[in-house]
Length: 327
Image: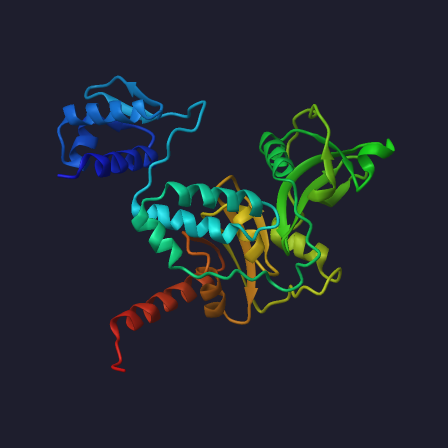
């Protein structure tokens, strides 16, 4: 039987993977009695986790959203993975400072055995070439834009370096997508006054409040945001966009963590922990290998050649893992 601390971690992980759990199901998964499940649920509540009880033949539990952040519980592998992700994000022009402070906080509360594992790592993060002119976007503005995109509300904003003080009329838009291109953040929106699609640099946007009425989103020309954005930027810089192999994937990482390492790809935020990445390469296997460096769950949107390339790499790596050559 698991120790109490380890069992609490497992219980919390189970509650996060499904909306509702019956007490009997949790007891069976943890190999404990329903009475012990009730005791463990009580311990998690004492730590600040808002676990709701619902009625039913066997009763059940649900992890609800709370009004404050409770203590976070991680097993050893999760803690190391979190530290590595924060280390990579520390180079981001948008969230680098916040990521570095979060990493310092995580390291401070780590047990000595885990801190030693992290200290043994020597990681040098190198920004892709051509990003010297990238201007960091305000994380608060990114969050505000994400909210209005999600709520499909008309957005008014001052635009430009001095737009907030010149008295210039605010831009009126229907915001559609946040896009990262070569570590620079853009808002793709329908401009109501110009009756056309426009891309706006996020670092030059000063949102006005309150937001306007709700709207029904238009479809982006061609139906593919990444292709549309690439066509807009082609010829405006030296970025290569005509790779013979180009694929689309969904990564289980925030867009802000992926954007600094996307090179000439485009990153579309799909929520706080997921993003869509469009990237090109000279070959499908080269593209699959390049995507693997993000070290997270990958969902292939297309095309089929990219799925096949991942399968080929999986077989190749599995064979390499079974092969050893004496030195």
